[in-house]
Amino acid sequence: MRVMIVEDEALLALELETEVEAAGHDVVGQAASSSTAYELAEKTAPDFAFVDIQLLDGPTGIDVGKFLASKNVPYIFVSGNLKRIPDDFAGALGAIEKPYTMNGLQNALDYLALRVKGGEVPSPPPGLILASEVA
Image 1 (tube, helix red, strand yellow):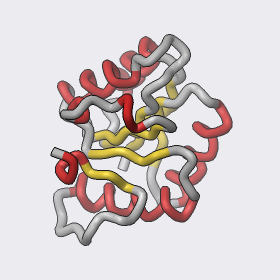
Image 2 (tube, helix red, strand yellow):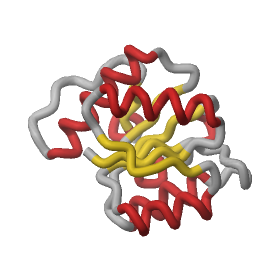
Image 3 (cartoon, helix red, strand yellow):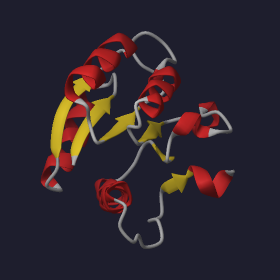
Image 4 (cartoon, one colour):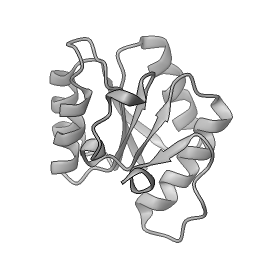
């Protein structure tokens, strides 16, 4: 799976990239602002994205998410404040709350990879909040 990371905290983005690659997926790039995220999405056509809500240019991750949804790119929010996510999840599959454990992130990534491929999926792992569960 080709994964895009939208995160303004460099250390978190690097940790996420390391985990994604360790799981056997390719990271197509990182974006710390909405403008960079839009450009990266257009240029790389990712299969999936992790999106933080608060970016360098403000709480623009929700707009980035809506843009990705309009391009049929599945994504989840990764945020320290899940209350900032709109009730409709802005087209996201779900969310992971920061701080997350590497094991929790790995389990969520495995689940999401199966779901994006369209295969049969098990129950979601703890720590992954699906939009369909909230709706």
